[in-house]
Amino acid sequence: MTEVWELPGASFDREEKVIAVLPVGSVERHGDHLPIGTDTIEASWIASRVAERLGAHLFPPIWYGVSPGLSRFPGTINVDPEAFISYVYSVLREIARNGYRLIVVINGHGGNTSALRVAMKRAAFETGTTIVSFDWWRDAGTTALRQLFASPGHAGEDETSAMLYIDGQHVDMKHAARHVPEWVPRYAVESPQVEEALYPRAVLGDPTTASAEKGGRWLQAVIDDIVVAVRDLAVRLGITR
Image (cartoon, rainbow, N blue to C red; front, top):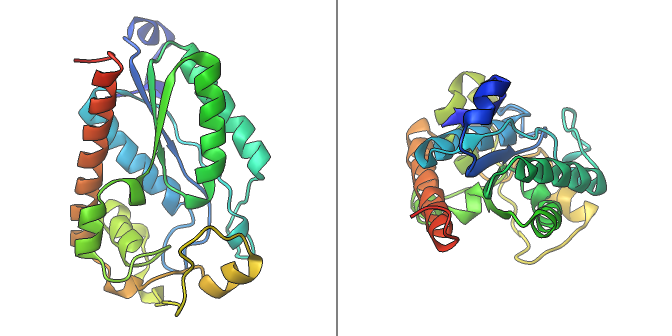
């Protein structure tokens, strides 16, 4: 795994440019117990392990994301979708221009998903480069998620467990508070009223039942699934054998 931001220019020129990995997250309130940078911290940690397993190049994370639903909470930095799309598109286009044949985006924030897909499509069809994205908490490790966690959600048991494993010194469990609503929509809905009902304390689920051990098991399953998927895609594209 190569962290491209540490390479001198001459070294970068000599590197074979095949697969690039780009973490994308957010700066957003995650209850009172998790860091506001949780989404980017987790995406970056996973992206680093995925890049290492793939022998890929790791790019610096995109920290800020689309977070209108939790913008009422201190600490959240919400980026307009149009600005996010334009910025991410530009980054993806430039990574492709540098010669990478496959770009793997590790997304850590659900609010980014729809805007991220727009940016990916524009960049892919303009440059001819293949771009694949993973909402890591729902596109990978799904079997482990169901087996390990009874009360997952935003800053809930699953995400708190992941952070306890990745960076437990910045998790303050004495402020962990449970919020499990009676109703969670199973369809796409955009509504300030629904957001306020689901996230009165910027928490969905029960973080009090989290553990680093469960987080480690889940994260390993996530990484395994993403690596298998990317390797399969690379073979199908003729990028690797």
